[in-house]
Length: 341
Ligand code: CP3
Image (cartoon, rainbow, N blue to C red; front, top):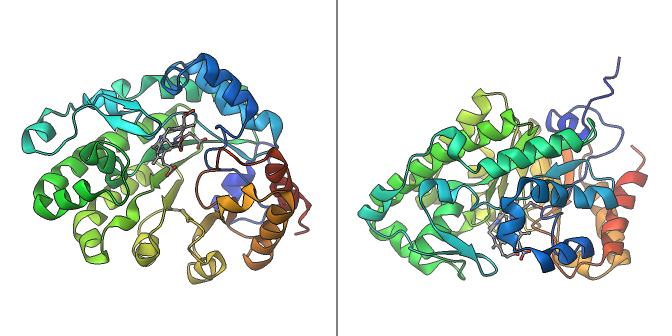
């Protein structure tokens, strides 16, 4: 008997047959939505993400407009940082008050108890789960240790993160200690999110591509493996997202995650064929949506035609751009819903 509570997204994660492919959009609760921009006039991003009722309201905004198959909790990869004792603000990306560049700064990082890690995000997940239809998946997330370290060491977003790369080259043991601390806190955080109702979690490694494969193997692999193993042992489905790192695709594909989330630089049909045991997520180029509904429809249809349906979660290759017309999102939804499987 089909279970009416079955979530399309989880069926795709398990590579089961689906009546149609599931769809969600990275940064779906963001500035392309007029109702989000309206609310942002009254509250800073930090205030919105810091107040569970408001965060849950924003999380649900895109679902009121579009029949998406997942909600992703409205928070930021930096949300757990206060629990480690790291002060930061947004301008518009994260800006860290005291960048971490020496042993004393790493030693000063706190080791929070699970309940101390972004409790406002956990509360927002609980509120969202209670309001969501049972058939809609709720996603939790965190930043990958390396992508978090990028902001902590560089102090802010920067083209190619030169301070971070110099730090990684000059002080690999210190980077290792920093990544180990982040890995342990993110493991606790994701388990708390699952306990609060997240059906699956996405680990965002947005700045994965900065290192060579050899450096990645030495510096990053052990930590990502540890984080994914902690989450997998608890039975929580894992979506691993990498960005701008085609040279690391095979390395990421060898890690324990049910779903490989990739940007538009990766040939998704080829990835799916090469890894028949994995689900794949992605990977429309977000800029195509800014070109309008017709361009979006054509690109979406091509993606669906080329990528095997089983185990495919439709998404963009990176976050939706603020200037995206709503009609483009409608065209994407329609292309996915009208596909005959
Ligand atoms: O996807 C979602 O809808 C959930 C919410 C979410 C946000 N940030 C909200 C946000 C998620 C999953 C993130 C993850 C995030 N944050 C990543 C990984 C994904 C990626 O985009 O690569 C990174 C690198 C960050 C760091 C960050 N936070 C940046 C670079 C910025 C500024 C630039 C931007 O895209 O706006 C932020 C701020 C931020 N995080 C906003 C939102 C909605 C914009 C806030 C605003 O001004 O209203």
